[in-house]
Length: 372
Image (tube, rainbow, N blue to C red; front, side, top):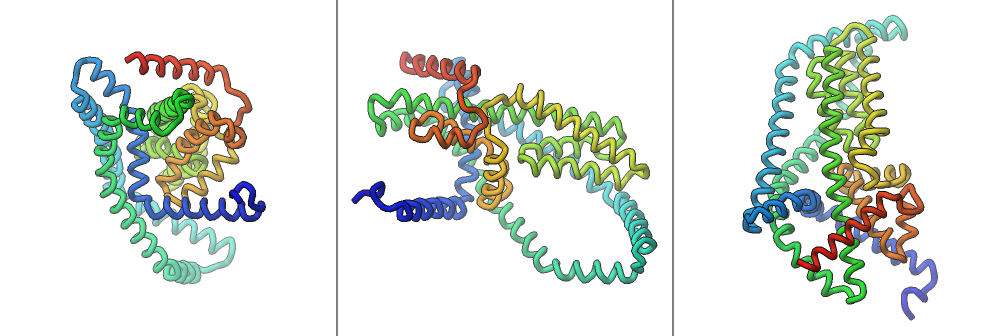
């Protein structure tokens, strides 16, 4: 008797066990899988660059190496800029600490006058809460430090992954042709091409989206005279990668800075207004134009995937969950038996005109690859 002929409860148990094993594997192997996944996205992103260099008669290995060096030079420059902004913030911390102390004294005075709780009682309550959470906080900080150190060690392997993934792309194509039936080769290669197109479009769109939002946020904060406006503008833009939660955190940080450094409530409200306006522009104009419908996932699926990925891979999972889900949707949409799952993940029932054009483009690419 095959599995399909078994009772429903038996089939459901087998599937749940399989899901549990996959989740356990993802958690146990995250130090390998997270850098490898990042490398896959960068590989899709850098393939056009290395192909262009090969078209200019660069040797294949050298073209791939140059594209990787260019990408990591850009990333290093952006990290240097961000670290420089953070160090500027750290240097101003003593002044901000004095302001924070003055604000805290005002809050204590307000609580004392409104709720008739003396400052001594407030201090005793705060001290007890700090002691209660000190041990768990120390464990949390130690865990974050350990995870960060481990990830940075694995991060060093990303350029190596990118190099070999790009170098052996033809071998992977031949492998797909060998493991699939002859009548399915073109269809499977088309799915791989569509996944590649989705990844390229999403990653390039996200980088451009971050750049545009950084300019808009920083300009608005600079006009208001918010201290470290560029730092908070860039942070808000970077956190925008994480759906829902990132937007909330990215908007809260500059608002807190305005509350801390400005005496009038009009400044925090103005910062909030800038965040709302920029987010409105991003949701309705920037993201649809820059990123497009490459990852057309409905909000319910996005929320569930965000929560699940944060539990499995933490913050990297929250960043990677949307493009991975978009890739899964592309696979589901192009396999007949899995189309219902693709429909469940996405927002639309049928392909849009843009997706039909994308299909024609991929078919042309496949025919051109066969000719070459």
